[in-house]
Length: 151
Image (cartoon, rainbow, N blue to C red):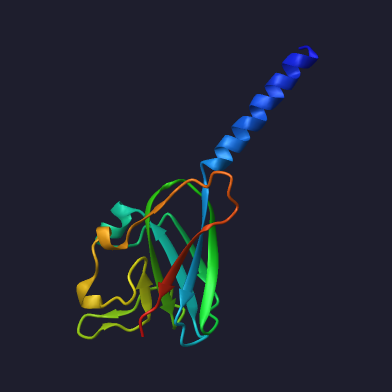
C-alpha cells in the first residue's frame, strides 16, 4: 500500500466513524417535583411495543438514581434515532417495583414523557407520550426532556 492509498483508507475510516457517531443521539432527562430523598428514582426508556405491553417490564435502557429534592438528571448516550417514551417512578421503598393499589391507584410518584401530570385512571396512549429522537449531526448538545412527577 502506498502513501496515497494509506491516506485514502484512513480518511474513509475516520469519515465512517464520524458518520456512525452522527447517527446516534444523547437524551438528557430532568426529573422534577421530587418531594423526598428516600428510595430510588427509576428512569426507563421504552419503545411503542414495550409501552403498550401488558406487563410493562421490558425497557430499552434504564437508570436507577439516588433522589435529591427537588430534581435529578440523567443522560442516556448514543441512542439510535427513533420514537421513544420515558417512564419514571420514585420508588420510595426501594423495592424496584411500581407500587400500585387496585382500589386507590399508585402509591408512589410517577411521570411520563410529554405529560405534565398523569392520573393513573387515565393512562395516556402512545401518541400522547411518544417523542422523536433525531440524530445529532455536528451537535454536542443532547435533546432535553423534563418529567414532572405527580404527588
